[in-house]
Image (cartoon, rainbow, N blue to C red; front, side):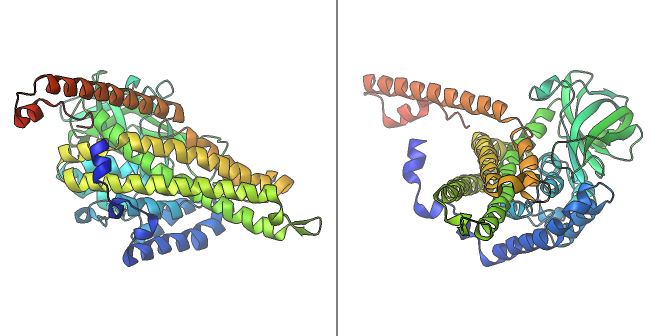
Length: 440
C-alpha cells in the first residue's frame, strides 16, 4: 500500500470535474430526466395504480441510460463504472425510482455481464439495456439475510432442466421484472446462480410488501414452486454462484453510494430554498447561525462522499482495464476493491441519513408532514443502511480486511528482518521470497 501511495500522482486522483464534454452531456440528460419526468410523477407512482415506473425505465433506456457500463456488443454503451455511478446519482433524486432504475441497470445486469456465456449475454442483455425488460436480483430469504450462503432455495437437476423450489424475500422490481437473477443450491448443497424468466412455469410473485418508505417502488416475494429452468440458464458454474452473487453486490455497494447521494443532494436543495423563503423574527431563517451550521455540515459530508465514491470508481475502472475481459479477469477486477466499495456504502448511507435528517429539521413542523417532499426523503433514506448488505455486515467485512492487512504487515516486517540476517543473498533471490499482497 505504501509503495502504491508513493507512486500516486495528482493526475491519477479522480475528481468529479474530470468528466469530459460527452460524459457531462449524458449526466445533464440524466438530471433533466429526473427533474422533468420523475419528480413530477412521484405522487402518481406512490399510489401503485399505474405501471409508470416501468414506463419511465423504458424511456430512460431509449435515452441510452439503462446500460451505460454494460458491453457495447450486447446493447450497452461500454462506458466507465464512474460515469454510470454519476448518472445514477442524478437518476436518484427520488429514492423509489432510484431503486427501480438502479436494480435494473446494476445488480440485475452485472452478474450476467461479468459471468454470462456468450449465448446468455446475447439473449438477455439487449432487452435489459434497452429498458424493454426489467431485471431483479433474488438472493435474500426469510431466514437467510446477511448469512446469504445459508439459503434454502433448492435446485434439482432433472437432466434437460432444473427444478427450483423456494421463496425469495425483499425482491426489488418483483412486480415488473421480466428476468430474475436467482441464487439456489443444486441438490441442496452447491450454491449456484440461475437466470429465471418471469414466464417460466412455476414462477410467481406474491403481494407487495407494505414498506415504511420507497412506496413508489415494487418489493415483493418471488415464489418458486417446481419452477422449470432450462439447463442453459445456469449462470457461470454450478457450485460457484457465490462469485456471481457477491461480486454483483461488491459493485452494487459502490453504486448504492451514488444512489444515496441523489436524495441527499435534493434534500439540501429543498431545505436551502425553504430556509431562504421562511422568515422568523423578520429575517430568513437561512441567516441564523444554527441553520448555517446544518448546511455547512451537510456540504462537508456530501463533499467527502463525492471524493470517496468517485476516487473508488476510478480504482474500479482501472482494475477492469487491467484485468477485465475474461470471466476470471472480471471476477478479479470486481473483487479487487471490494473493501473500498463497502467503506463507500457505509459512509455514504450514513451521511445521507444525517443530511436528510438535518434538512428535515430546517423545515421544522412542516417537514413532518407529507405535504413537503423532505418527509418522503426521510422515509426512503432509512433502508439505505439495510439493503445490499447491512452496514453492520459491511463493517464486519471491513474489519476483517483490516485485520488481514495488519497480519500481512507483520509478515512483511518479519521478512525484512530475515532479509537483513541473510544479506549474503542476492536482491533477486530476496524478491522471489517476498509474500504476495492479500489483494492478489
